[in-house]
Image (cartoon, rainbow, N blue to C red; front, side):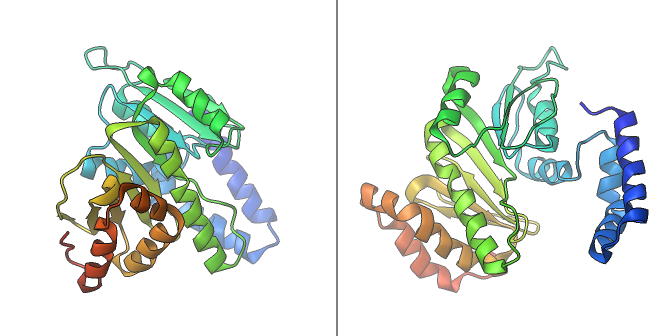
Length: 274
């Protein structure tokens, strides 16, 4: 876990960079960072970055992480989501009276060590070799939860970045098929469009409403989609079918999703009925 002294050095470095930076855009970004309450809170609570609070909020609402669970964190660097997962599943054994979970993080970048987590740095989560290592590290070769905060480097072209984000999120379907246990969950956060994915095998279709999050359950493929921005919903579902689900529909000879999309045109911001 990062020390408080390291956090202070990071803050000092940010102040120095703001003084030396020649780019107005860099100065604006650094100013926002220094004023951001979540950045300040992450330092105070020793989280590696502010994204920890995204997962904390989601888990408080949906109870995704339970003591004793096995968790895979995709795109884990610098490790903030893994920090939250370690706390929630008790993988460091902090509470001896609770079951002890497992947290495995994967990233192309280097991930600083974290007590209670196994990290596969310089590993591509889309590669079969990485899947094999995950199966070895996970108890019984299965995960209760797969988390992903992955995003490709921005190209500067919004539509291209949007499609690349969609494809990257949907690449997790292959991983889920290999390591996610029945009843498990997959949560994928897309920074720009603020969408989430969650796979819950064999969940009875239903509709739910929870504050600003819109729940959409699709029977075929047992897919649950959490859409944080309802205005983006139909475009996202279109991408979902284009890039990841058509072959599953054909293999299962199930038209549930097609029927769902046909009826989704009447969807409102307030509810979805499946």
